[in-house]
Image (cartoon, rainbow, N blue to C red; front, side):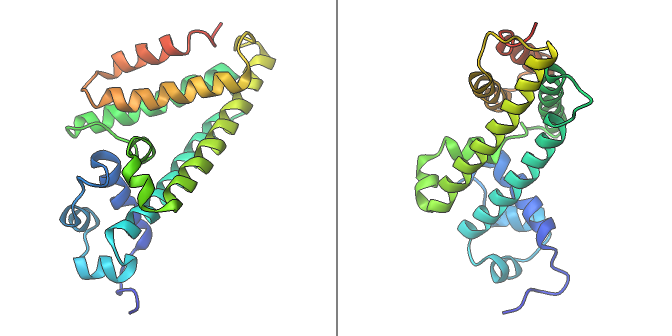
Length: 200
């Protein structure tokens, strides 16, 4: 069956990712997805076949969007390497601050998926996407950290790969910690403490 007239697939994927990143796969109902996307159940499943397929498409869309946003920061040659890391942390905390005003944490589809082995086992595409995304994000961080070590804004005492893994762990940790209702100021202190070994 053809796609319903006026059905904006990108807008639906944005809305679905917004629900999945906050509530996770199991706790996101079809009713929530339809309400968030502003579409009927029949329209949703005519396009995506199932909740599982919608999740996979939304995860792919979310990963692509988030990585593009991170790349814009981490590849900004007008910033020092240290400022690229600080700007990335600031972007994460701003998201959490905005979400807190709406009564919840921002969440993260990637973090939810990594923490849910049953979900990853439902479809091999999920694990493949997560693995690919981790490699890509690590590469972005490694390049920014190498730039920071070259410009002197980041310590050279830690290898770029280890530093990238640390930075990624701190960011994932912020997403989890934000679920407890920590203030943005507390999240920022946690991040700076976690990255202290990298900063001069």
